[in-house]
Length: 345
Image (tube, rainbow, N blue to C red; front, side, top):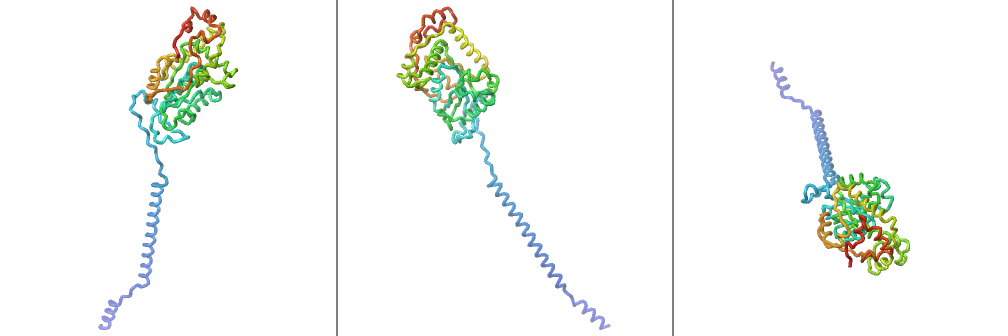
């Protein structure tokens, strides 16, 4: 009985620790912790990497839209902020730009008028762009050309680039404007283009100027060069010395055709925002130029031109067959063209 008790106590006291299993368990636990640590570190590094890419590499700067200046509601479609592809407008990026076109007929003073506009430090008028026929082949080429001009990507000597406040061109009625008038009206309305019509009241004076210019193109009295406009009084005197002879048989039909073209143009484009000017009014009253600047919503400046007028003085001194012209026009709708409508010193 005592021996059994002794063996029982011995069995109770002797504990056989699982040394081998405990070591394996500890190593396994340590390995698990290490794997978890590596896994967590890799996830952390990946997140930091993605944050870096998102924060520094893939950031795209979104241009802040320019605020429309304090203008009336009707005027907003005519306020633009072009983004040219050929240069950066820099600090002038949010300066508003107005689009315009000068519509006229040959020998109506449009060249002189355009030089006046271009003397403004913020106006760019790019000349007779559509005198080049390929540019007016169809509406597709016309639109492409206009888009470049109004996006400030048509660079000429008249371009003011960054700080342009008004940009446009001179477009003669016979250079695709009338033939495509419906589509062009839609374009002008969609793009917010304002029209400046410039005509001559005295169509007889215009006819004389056309004939004199045609003579200059062929004879080239100025050192073998043709000049539609001159910058010196001596050159003007040489060109004015030629006195054309007008075909009186065709005179009235030609005057009527010119008159009808003007009336038709005003009818075609009467739904556009426009202003109508006459060469004689600008000659007599330079405050008309202030009206033009108000129309374009540009700062008022004194506008100047280096061009010198060629034909001055009474009409009877500018043609060879004045008496024949008087006989044809007296008693007609065009009799008033025989009289002086303005004086140029």
